[in-house]
Amino acid sequence: MRLRVHFEPEADTEYQQAGVWYEGRREGLGLEFFDEVDATIGRILEFPRLGAAVPRVPPDLPVRRLAVKRFPYHVVYLETAEELRILAVAHRKLPRSVDHRR
Image (cartoon, rainbow, N blue to C red; front, top):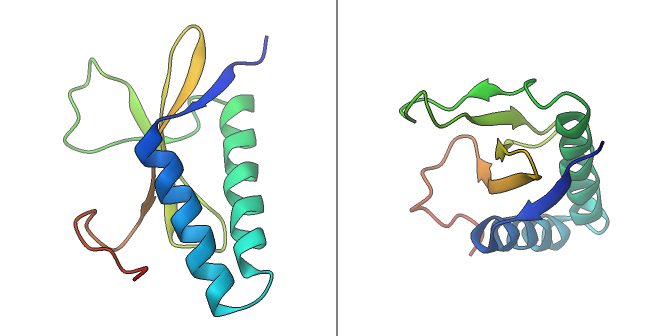
């Protein structure tokens, strides 16, 4: 059975803003970003334990992250019995408090 994908609101905002930022850099690049994030989520759905544990998260909370190919982002997620919760689409190099897309 394939899990239902649920984006947390902040994760969806990060995803959309990053795609818009890339599209502003080069036409079509935003769509390529969306495609790569979607492909990453597809890999996670196929192999939910593929991602690495997120540092500094309690071990009893199995939050994982998987790198997005071609872009400096991770998909941060939590697998539950009912769904795959996307917690963040996070830039790998910048702290979340830095909004580099403005």
